[in-house]
Length: 145
Ligand SMILES: Nc1ncnc2c1ncn2[C@@H]1O[C@H](COP(=O)(O)OP(=O)(O)O)[C@@H](O)[C@H]1O
Ligand SMILES: [Mg+2]
Image (cartoon, rainbow, N blue to C red; front, side, top):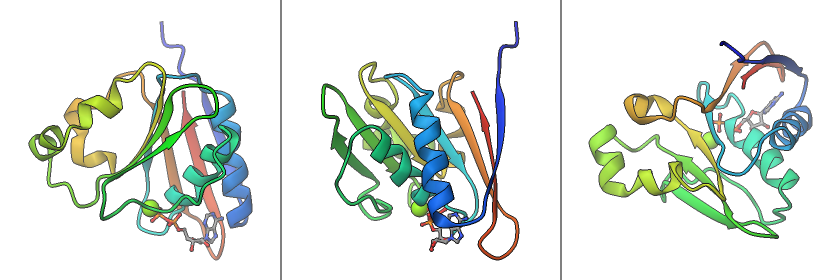
């Protein structure tokens, strides 16, 4: 029944974290929601940049903290939605914002920074990424598929 697969990565620099993001993207298919758990500066956005690169997105990728969502067109079809819910107070605010649309698009991917804001409405089958500070420049990254 429980087919959850877990991968533990150690990142020694920003570039490692980008590569890990790309590696995870290559293991995901369209319709996947990836939740990114970790403190400020843990590397959620760096990971997202690597993930986006692996999907063929060349545009700059930074945290959409003020706009909440940034959409990127994928080369073939579908989009990557990069959500930063830091400024969203909770589920009702997220729903009013239209978060549903981004979490339920079968041809697209969604990356969610600060997923704890919408705990109750995250898809059960989301890929869970935890990023932890582990000393100067070092991060422990756990991915649960
Ligand atoms: N191993 C590492 N992986 C990712 N980022 C790192 C690493 N070491 C240092 N950093 C730095 O930590 C910061 C991570 O920032 P960011 O990805 O925006 O964090 P978050 O989105 O989690 O708040 C960047 O300034 C980056 O250069
Ligand atoms: Mg960020």
